[in-house]
Picture 1 (tube, rainbow, N blue to C red):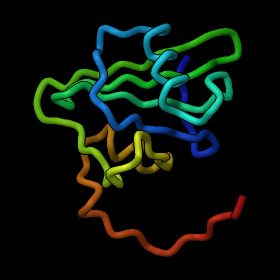
Picture 2 (tube, rainbow, N blue to C red):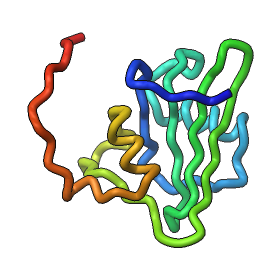
Picture 3 (cartoon, one colour):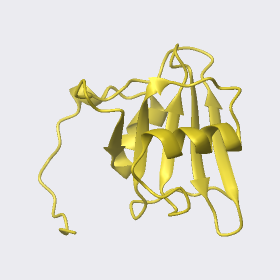
Length: 117
């Protein structure tokens, strides 16, 4: 079962992804464009060109798992990227906003305690 929590790290790939890619194709993108270990338990997020489909790839204890969502209407919003970044780390709350279609630029965050790594 796929489950996501605030303890995991989430990395969004900036480029458009061919949604026909499955485990091996997405793993190849992770090796080529991310500086993070594929088997770390981190979640890798991919969007298609029209941004109406999203895939999340993760390593579970015994193998890879993919979460795939197709929107019937609307698009997923990309967070702000710097032009030289090929990927961006998202927080758990940003992932939830992305999946629910909430515009991230309109969100005002209140102060909260954050443990430093």
